[in-house]
Image 1: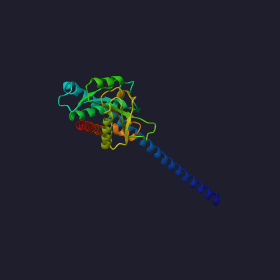
Image 2 (image 1 turned 120 degrees about the vertical axis):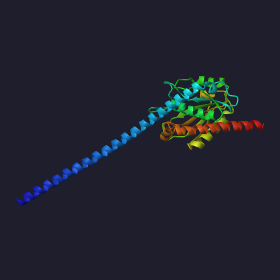
Image 3 (image 1 turned 180 degrees about the vertical axis):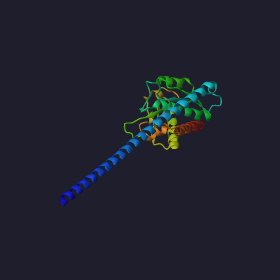
Image 4 (image 1 turned 90 degrees about the horizontal axis):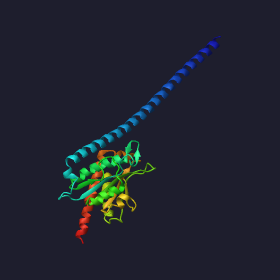
Length: 272
């Protein structure tokens, strides 16, 4: 009789222990799942916040620059100043609903190139250059029209701003394209810009490339280049390009390249 009672007690104790262990395991699993969900939620919130911040910065920069442009049109965007170091046409790649360029979620090439163009315009004008832009808002401008604007502007240089993308998300860096057939000085400009922009940003230097089919540098008669300032498909590049401080570095790099270009051309002319 006692043996049966002991057995029942042991069974009861084991059953109670098993229930406690099961409850403990369930609690641990529930905690782990809650932690994972919280991490995913926080990560998603951060990404959404980054996109919203970039959009706000882009719209604010666009609005402020347009207001400044409207209020000082005779000073900045009309005929070149007599003391200008040179006239430069900036071409923010893509634009409009039909041509967003490469995209990643809500982040679009057309918005980044325009935000960069406005910052670059400020840097160039503050350093004595006269700047014209092929577009100052999110609108479609045909490639041939961009080249026409450059050719009829009387400008010294044409710089087209673009962003790359690749199926391999590990691919990153900056590269610059030029057309040697239209203007022989385009290669000098491309090399100067590529070198200075990668030096200041420490981005991967993907080099310069000759191309005779890209319309904006094929049809533009003045020295020109097309700069791919990074890969939207790469996490680090994308984070950098949506950051105004990094775009300031890109702008400074392009300014340095433009200065170096004019120095090289001046030296070359003097040595003849």
